Length: 273
Image (cartoon, rainbow, N blue to C red; front, side, top):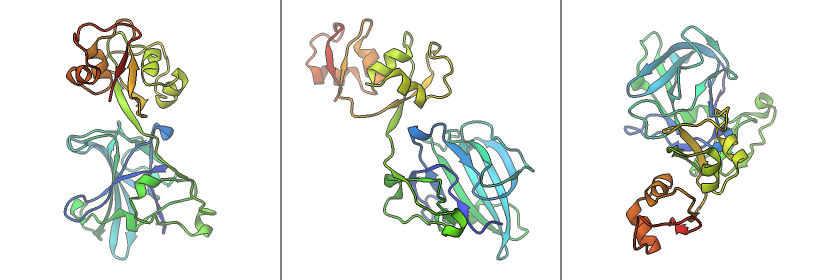
């Protein structure tokens, strides 16, 4: 078993830390610059479980061997879809096991919930043995650490002889959100609405192979930069604008002193905040 377990993501943006009795794991948030957010095995081992649970969604459990009388397991929850590995597969730190998702009823947004579970040797797998993963995770030189993800807690770094140097690139997270496609939308129209270019929008949504083919209900990643106004286009209504920007018609009416909410015109500038 490798002495050092690496963070199981390329971009470390910690959204929630381990807290005894309350949150028995480590949550990693997502970043638009690294979509799709790939999930890797934290160390070499054997896949024990690759399955779906109602509460935790698609998940993987890996057995990493025995140390100090404990069988060491790691667990990866809320993957986007069926794992890329299956029980019995051998994995290393370079093995991608899935993509960060938001599956399972316990999930309140796209992230990876990661568990470190040392269980007394030969006892069955039991999540009640979970302990703080941060005591065992290390940042290798190819991992990016998000400033806001550190939350004032030091990140462990691997000795240079192991990681071939550990000059960690530090970046601020790129803030993003999602948009649900409406009837009549086009990618160009969505990009323009959020002050983006079509190329930028496509880079944030690598799964879109045909930019001319989107459908109502589809989830699109967009920039959530501080957009405070919107210029009305032909066919727009206050209801459509409110849905697009996550607000309400009544708020838009109040912000813009609109007398008749059914009467807006192309070129009109609408305050959003």
